[in-house]
Image (tube, rainbow, N blue to C red; front, side):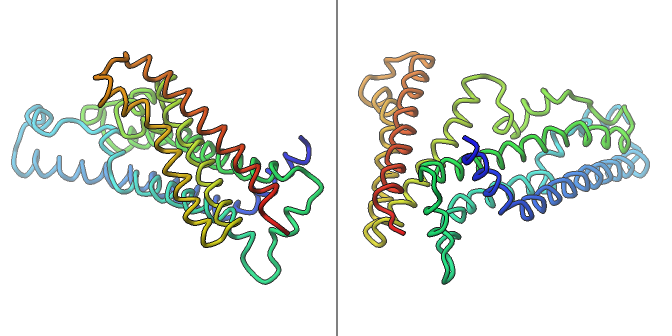
Length: 276
């Protein structure tokens, strides 16, 4: 376990500088976004109220108050989230392929360490999970700060103050902050399973090269089919026979099977097919 944790720490620190840049981009962009969107709203309110001579009550009836939910749909807010997401998706591939880049490939030394090779596989997956949870935690910390900035910028009669739970539940941020156990399993369980599937597909390519690309694509397709099979059967063959909660538990079992197969296959490939 100690060696595994050292591997996780090593993998985490290799991406740390860029990860901190993502933190900085998210903080700056979202704080600036709250300020810019608040000023735009107030400028619009001033034009309508003082130039067009529209009563405040009528303005609020027509244009409504501003809240952090409206701001969360702006490019200032969603842009860094998308950038972080895309960067982590790219890193799911890069975390493996960088070890084979260059003349003195680091993968040879990494796989020759006196530990089970599956620890390398699991350490990389754990690193991705920590990166995701770190960005989610950052967003959770930023929301009350951004709410306070909005209060400083906009008078109370022109804004709607919401709790963090309301903001995450009524906006697109719900995917980052599931409000039910089922949503949590679907979003995060599905994401973790997808990472392991991609990892195993990469190991197919590393093990068999050109043929491995075909094997990897087929493996991903088969895994997706197994995962989606209960939904497809329930919809097109059984005529919506299962209740939603029953279908959820069937999907949960299918997901566990796919995840277990991904880890087992990945272990087999990295242990027996990748040579150093």
